[in-house]
Amino acid sequence: MYVEKNDIQSGIPEPHLKVITENNDENITTAIKDAMSLVAAYIGARYDIQKEYEKTGANRNVLVVKMVKTISLYNLYSSSNRVNMPESAKEDNLSTLRVLKDIQSEKAQLFGLTRLTDKDGTSSYIKIGGNAPRSNHY
Image (cartoon, rainbow, N blue to C red; front, side, top):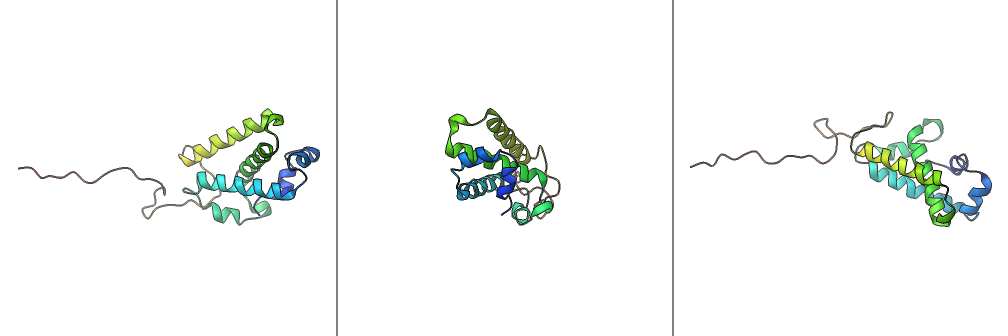
């Protein structure tokens, strides 16, 4: 998997992780998969995120790893006990979602990821415009 349990462990003390995962590694796997799906939903139209998710170790994009990790931790807290969720986890998640929205709207970009483009070399996204004006005058 793109983000592993040891990546999650680097962002939270081990006793806290055991509590929010109920000492079940399957909960970590589920939180990571959900986070990866969310990141892919936001930036999949602009970047080849599946190609990025195939990478391991030091070959991974640092920012994508950080975003998946942050969202995973938020998912773990959300599924276990929202009342005891640290304020920093909430703020980090909101900040990550803002970055994802900026990437999606092309206000920010991810360096190191393969950019998806249309045949004409522009962004692969919704195009605006319409039909050519008609000249049916009598």
